[in-house]
Length: 79
Image (cartoon, rainbow, N blue to C red; front, side, top):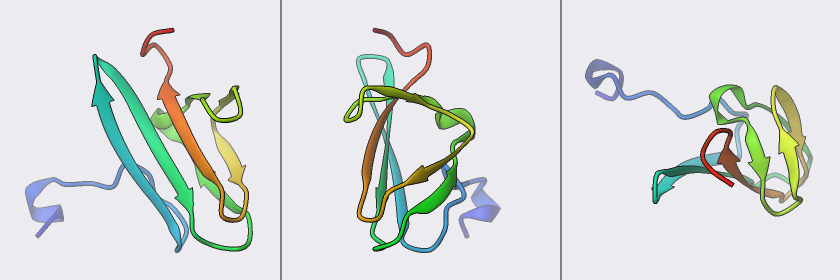
């Protein structure tokens, strides 16, 4: 049903990695949660930006730690 309606995932991720997005005041925030015990590689694509919890830029292929959480403010989304 989703593909028929043009609904696509935010990111293609390994099993156990959850991704959601929120928009507030025109800024896009992507939340990436790794429910696995082991680190997982995630291709960030359009979700690249500033990871707020570690205060660093993330882009391309990146490793999220086991049980890790990222909150990424999209590039060009302000401050």
